[in-house]
View 1 (cartoon, one colour):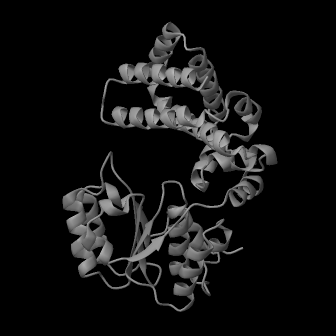
View 2 (cartoon, rainbow, N blue to C red; view 1 turned 120 degrees about the vertical axis):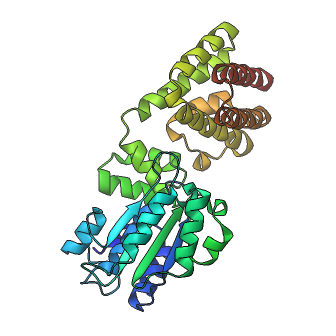
View 3 (cartoon, rainbow, N blue to C red; view 1 turned 180 degrees about the horizontal axis):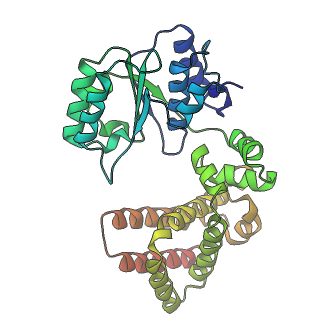
Length: 332
């Protein structure tokens, strides 16, 4: 199977890129944008392979030495740039600029992927803009971003746009079964929890701590339901000590309260993400629980925002857990 064809979903995007390859009308710059984990880098790398593959009649063959080396990022006329630390620095763009001046070494073109283009410093972005305004011959730039409007409008205007949207849960489920040989029931759960993001589903599938994290979340929900203030304060302290797991815990909590909200409003099992917890959901949700669930979602988002702004983590968690417990009491 050819390279683009192996990628699940994104049929519109794949058709667009295949048309470009088939008609040999590759532009000098493309901007792949969409949510984190949606598959932008996989699509961009497959497109790069299609541009460079000597056996290509459109899509990259996926079997020649060029394709193999491109997909392993070991081909001399292909490179992937990402942030060093928190940013893509001007020195990185200048190095790219110097390399781009040389003719392709082993293929007809050079292809550069800039992954996380939103992380470019202002100086780096301006340097890239000058390159895009007068691009070197036989050179293609593939920019990837999860935050389109953080880029300079002038950079956006000089790129062909490739918009990528979330994948259907059924396609992600099938991918997990075929590529990771995951049990169908678990694959369905991961597909639903991934929120349409294949990258997130693959990450959860390969994360041994994921099931432990979900277990932690539901234990936490039990404590919230009991509403013992002393126990909640102790829990906030424990969460602070394991702050590296906090983003995942808050994300899972959002999904749980989302399910409570949806269930209380619709009673439709087909809309539920935590399908393995449907009995627990039915037990704890009623016709009047949607408002407290909605308030809880707002509280979790607010806590995430405060933590991202370097607020006191323990205090933020203490307030969050007590407010969530208060919402439970109001729903009862």
